[in-house]
Image 1 (cartoon, rainbow, N blue to C red):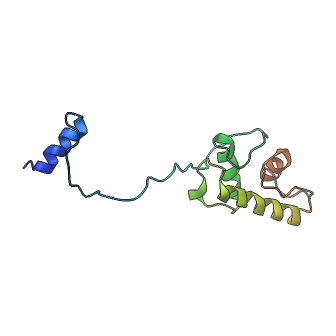
Image 2 (cartoon, rainbow, N blue to C red):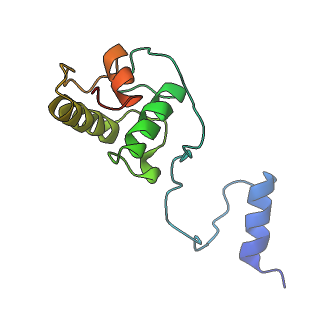
Length: 124
């Protein structure tokens, strides 16, 4: 059975009519989540500076490395270098510097030395 609201909604959706009042209850008021990537491949193998505000494959690789080491959860691998990734990088740098007795900078930026640390075990 076609109701007045479903007919009006169909007209609005097709663009045939504008300005009609349609009463509808949304199925869900939730926000669509960001894309979450799996860490089952290498997204980036270089050493370019990667920092707050960056997006893309470099960030996904940083996040995957941090996930493997327990600094991020799988749901946080989204390709966006935001506060969560920044804090995880800081925590990783602190721990690596302390446990591995290295001179790694603790700055929240993934540069050449942090890339190397993320991709290796502690030196013996």
